[in-house]
Amino acid sequence: MDFRRFRPFLVAAMVFGLSAGLTLFAQDSTTHRGRKYKTPPPTSRIEVTILRNDDGKPIENAAVVFQLEGDKGNMELKTNEDGKASIDVLPTGSKVVMQVIAKGFKTYGSDYKIDKPEMTFEVRLKRPGQQYSIYEKHPEAADSSNGAGKDKPSDAGKDVVPKDSGKKDSSKDQPAESANQSGTKPDSSQPQPQ
Picture 1 (cartoon, rainbow, N blue to C red):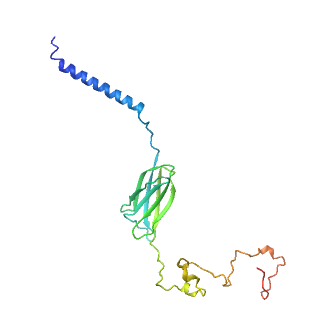
Picture 2 (cartoon, helix red, strand yellow):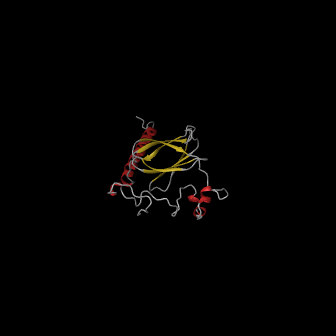
């Protein structure tokens, strides 16, 4: 037999065998020296729907921002024409802060616990309220005789009762009904103890 004809096939078979052996050896050695593989934690699928508060229509292109508790980064999504955004990489059992930002609406933010494999949230955004202006007249500030409402713009919308107005807080210093032993009404002409 003439081995010269089979020599190229024999060399090719030896090179193939040697390369296959080296590949198996390399794969075997990386499992012992490299880092161990950890499976990622299970994740939940979250779907958020952003709607207008006044008419319930969807808000397109609103930014929905998720930040995991204890994590420095955040994940931002944009809503589609139906006002929906979905994410499926948040670990189940984690706490997350969700913030919604849309042009022309108040910013919304709240904490959530991701405890189910699939969760849906609906957020209704409100239009911003009227800002306090020093150039407009405020009747509740002009009515106060001692000027307490003029210095504090944050008190403009609140029901502020001056201390000497004569009104009394009904929850303080009122005796219980069972404390009246006589069963008669007190005389209104006499001053009552407080």
